[in-house]
Image (cartoon, rainbow, N blue to C red; front, top):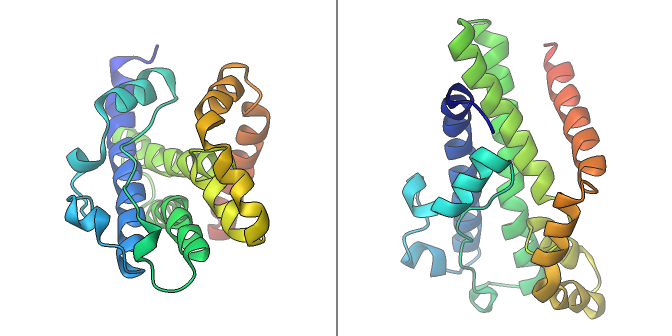
Length: 201
């Protein structure tokens, strides 16, 4: 279990990462013609609109959790619906990577600002990379499954969507057996090294 100090450092990073992630989904869907998320008040940077209390609790204390899924209706999309879902799904983890890069730039510019400030900034960087990599995993209900479905030929994309009824169970098995960590941690490490190395940090 994390200490109270760890929780206080993690919470701002989670609020930023999850809020921007979900708002990005809503914004992408709206730009493609779907007003569903906007009409339900999800096109916002208000974290209360996006956080699931139980999911946030599990994230902080057990390092596995979730936010409220953004409602998307691809029937409203202009153009190809399959590609539309790809872009909407990509918007969330893509935004997390952008936040991580911006955070690294801030670190580069301002340097050390004391132990507490440094810790909070590093948590924002690290957690946004984690959220991005985790959501790129192609297992429903994660964004990676819809990204993969959008990249596959239409005649094969239905296979991914048919897995959705089993996806959460599959994901839990991968998480609690530790199988997912063998992919997740090396990918996180490489992306962080790439970002920091690019900026010379």
